[in-house]
Length: 262
Image 1 (cartoon, rainbow, N blue to C red):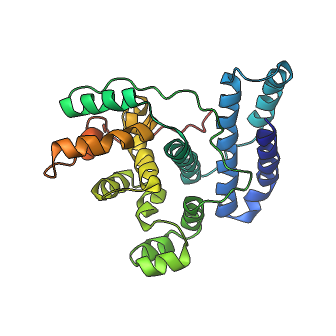
Image 2: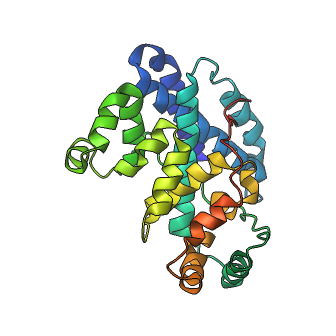
């Protein structure tokens, strides 16, 4: 609750500053507003609040609803959604220990090639946000992109130059910040032994390409797919890419949803 109020202060500041401060500030504001909406949804569904806390949630929601979003550029709104989705996926990959029974069930459905069962994500017990003003390599890359996309494209072609210009960022995330989700997904699927950031980026790109992201375990439960993947890969052999096959079951066109439109 205290963290959400701190974010509200940050958003209120940037709501006044971003129109004159450039597109990087616009992205900071948009991401903060998106984080606030996610935090508010979590608070509304929480059963752990005290009576006082529960009474404060409607007032907090009213304050958040007053933050303007209609003036934000479409690509800024898209990136804000993706940054928060990436953070949420990364949090799950780092913090959520998959249930072995669910891993086994997913692996079995995956290997059979039929419909994959429903693996609804349990309620998050932590907000999907960083501290107010929090930094991340992907956020820095996205900020650079909205300010100068040509510079990001040029640097992505030279790993040494890219690392010098955008420390700790991944050049394979350039298609993701550009909104080229098909390329972002294809690039990640071609990688071997992906790290946590790669899994999170794949989850975001895949979610954008799904006709119904809520049905895909990769979009909702990336930690579960990662846990089942080694077993499936071992049993299917090197001649196939089981992750690409799983992804193909859900991709039905690029998502055009805009979760900031309320």
